Length: 461
Image (cartoon, rainbow, N blue to C red; front, side, top):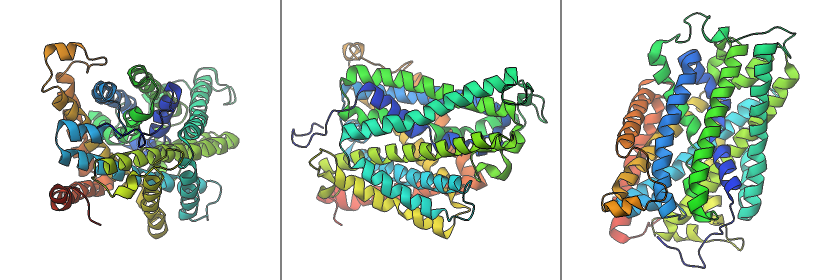
């Protein structure tokens, strides 16, 4: 799993870079667009869905953190699956994670096209998507320090905006500031038809699929392990802080918008015609704020897609080092960036531009469902890999772990059970049933390994 000196990527990411890259990847369409669909499934009880999802994701990240601190390598869970399970598992995890973020990038550029319709209703969705891809590919080909700084400030824009939304919303809820002096209170959470659980407790669990989608990206902390300074300190600190801030942001913003505006009105159009945050401020008659928020959610989608392409380049690079991908993908440029892997990922992601041209009205939920199902599989593998890593460890070895899994192995079982239940709910719903494409992908990638990689130790293209 060690890389030669001339092939090593640059360890140029500090703790603040890692935290903001993780937040930048995770706070995107899952909060700013798909939360509309989640609200329509659970109503106010979505707040509980986020808290439950946060607990599940924390167990997953602790599992990843235990291994990443011990083995801080580029490629993270693909390399770990290869080491602790078998080469086939590493191959499937690496290529599936790559495919996950290609699809996620397609979803993000679809969201950007939807957001742009706020200002230009007649503008075809595919045009903003294409321009976004070109811009982001250029960004990812800079040095890692420049990328880290760019993503830091990119993510900071949406973090500051979320804080503004929370503070401004609280001012409206309890003081009436910005709402003509009218205090809204929190009655919208329980007094509307159906109360806090308008769809029963089943609605709370049904929304978990979109909640998991919202948290996909937090695993970037593990992906960056090979490029962070002082991983023993940075990785645990980043996991603890990032999850706390993400829960605060998700729960806080959803709490605010559902308090100040009836949740039934937020979800008109299924939550995919515009951001529910924009709908809220437009509904309150605060047009300037709605326009500002719409700009911010565009930068949020760009940031998330940017982080995804960063991750994709590193995953393909690691696969190439293990001779599980074409060798040209393992080349790095003079800036020590896996440029070929990044360019290849962007070329494939450009298929999303075509999909937005052919079927702009239906593509978002289809892509979001596929992303979520792939993310669930990756999360499950992370938990399983950590369990495999413990098999040959003695009690003394475990005692020396610098960031051990909490409540092992019971927390692993809880996380796997929750992920399985979420996948079942995702496949059952009509809007996200196409997510079963992910099962076809897993079968294909397994066959590719058996037919080409296992026998010849390389991919023949």
